[in-house]
Length: 316
Picture 1 (tube, one colour):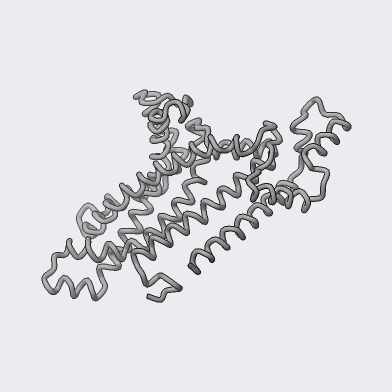
Picture 2 (cartoon, helix red, strand yellow):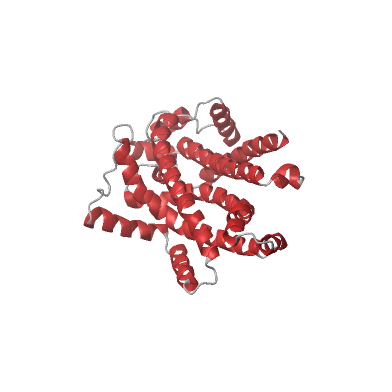
């Protein structure tokens, strides 16, 4: 109960702080949203009227608390650029990004856990340097470069999908999943290599502990001890790392969405920043902050479930 209260409090404080900093940052940047909206039709009278309609003529703190009150009441405001409710603009793009993130995360978990276990078992094998080199290479290659290669190979050469022609989720869910799979792979590959390396290192360290030596000396099979005991203890830091990865995937998806032409949250955030669309940017920033806190909370809960010693500040 105390853990949940602390996490909820941290979530609220983080969301408020992040939204305030983002709000302040955009007000310090040069430029005028009213000017950007009116363009060549801007006149002093029209600019003043537009600022009044957008609430930009009010003091900074009044603007911020007005937005914050609306946010917690379910009103994300009206987009400056599209003149539509922010919620209706964000939701379709949020669905696309979350679906891509979930596909990427599933790929990371399904691939990294068995690869990490296998790599730890064969840590002293003759081909260990090959696995290590491949892992280092995968970690070093940026996601945007992988996206270009995958788009060219599977999109243009093999024609397994059409780059830039993303099907709508509501009309063709299977086609959207297939399209997002290639983007998710580009996001997942570097993080699979990182997770495998961490799990491998953790398992090797755990195998050197006294309880493992004792279990093996009593005649227990080494592979059985590894699967039933060592892997369980090694998963706690790995799950924490996966929680951080879950949060980082959203940030890494921005560039990938640009390359693949995916109408997700990342592309929309970049466009809204360019257009100085404060309500949209504020809502997206708070959603990202919420996602980061949520990922960490879920990872902590799973870690406590695996290792009860982590509960209540480390007390068993």
